[in-house]
Image: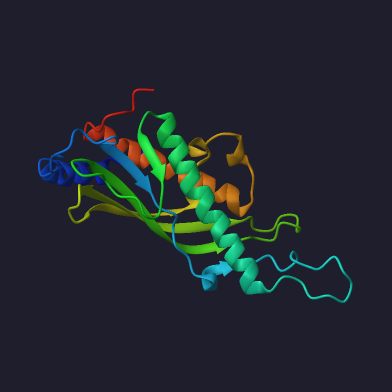
Length: 207
């Protein structure tokens, strides 16, 4: 899956602001060209749980509360998406980090990937032929130089159900759980950000 229209627009915007990066006064930054991936946000209300799961092993005892289960599913999906994206970017030679708080160092610049889950569906994994797990996200990529304000480069929507088989990364991509769906989407995000970085001559991408 390639994104030439998005990459072309993003390239023009990034090149327009790239010359504004401030210079550090105390030597070169340790991470001059970082890619920062935040864990995507979610609301428990957008999570559809598999009601056949979550029962108690103790007869007569209540199972895990639905909201608690939903929050656990959302946190796991957020972690797997961000972690996969970072690992894929690192494998391509980019200085990528998963962090909800980090920003570019003084004199440095960063591409910052954020997003929001629009739906997370556990599916009905115990029913043969039923719909498998899936999720969809809205993704934003910002450019930030030093302590300057982030500037939006582009945004896109991704749905795990629409990712072609050719885009599935590693053996984990062949499963059907929510965490696998998150890893698939994270892999596609990494490919997209890598294309964006390559078009703009971002250091890395040599492997």
